[in-house]
Length: 164
Image (cartoon, rainbow, N blue to C red; front, side, top):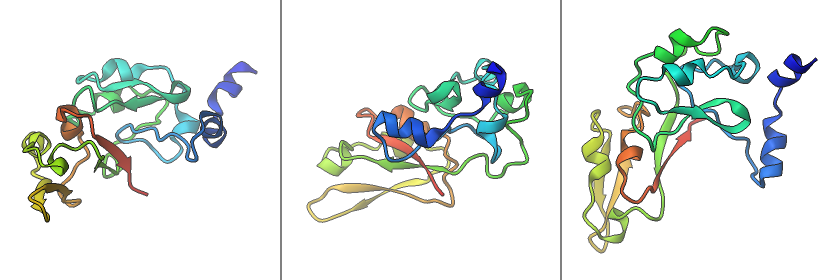
């Protein structure tokens, strides 16, 4: 029936047809391990998101677009999730960290510390390297994956990557 077909998505196959080697990650805080099986893509978590960072992503699954802002971990998405695809029992809320791309201004000798300034946890520091350029470095123990650094990057060179 149509309902059972809707709950099964082969992310590896979708990745193949998108020309990507890896399936899309569904970055949603507190996603249970069987998220893709349990999530019915109703959108209730998206509507409940107080920061409006949850959007409809690949395959209709919710995903956090941290370019829109930071996740405050208010847990409104968990409260709204009737199927139980999100659970406060998942700790930490998610395992994503910022990755700095080639367009990072600081890496090109331009003084930019917007990501470090936006980080409430002070997880981003800058280390000088030869030539006077500073590389942003993330302290994994402090980073919550909130995405405040992503939202404030003027060059959009920060992407969140899931740790496996």
